[in-house]
Structures are given as C-alpha cells and as structure tokens.
Image (cartoon, one colour):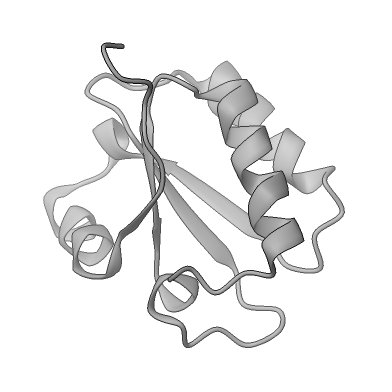
Length: 103
C-alpha cells in the first residue's frame, strides 16, 4: 500500500490522469514500502517505452509543484533511466496508475 493520505492519493491520481493517462505509473522508494516520514518525497516513475520529452515532463512536475502537497513529488521517465536505477525502481515499485484497457 502506498503511504499517502487518501486525499493526497486522490489528488496525485487526478494529476497523473490529466498529464500521462496512457502510461502505467509506479510509486517507488519510502512511500511505496510504507516507511515514509511526514515530508518524505513521493517518487514516481512514468513507465514509458519512449521518452516523454522535456516539455511534457516539466508540465507534470509543475502540476505537482502547484498542488500544495506538504512533500516534494519527484517524477522520472522510465525510458530515460539507466539499468541500475531501473533495478531500484522495480525493487520497491508499486502501481499507482494503470493505463486504460486496450490503450
């Protein structure tokens, strides 16, 4: 279970659905394993096969920055990560968003 208050989780899902609805998104790190402190980052990986592009990733980051969370949200683009970092993401990753069926 992802370590977020229900209202924060709902807001995160709404932002993801508005910016990257076609991609699975994993939460990884402390919040994914239930070990988060109050201000621990929310680490998210957008599971892409091709890079999202800097403008789209920036818009997603700005949406999270403007959402008023009492913690920082860090987003990474899977296609732009290296092999070792992917191991870290997979080790603790929990799905926070699934793409629509058939899409």
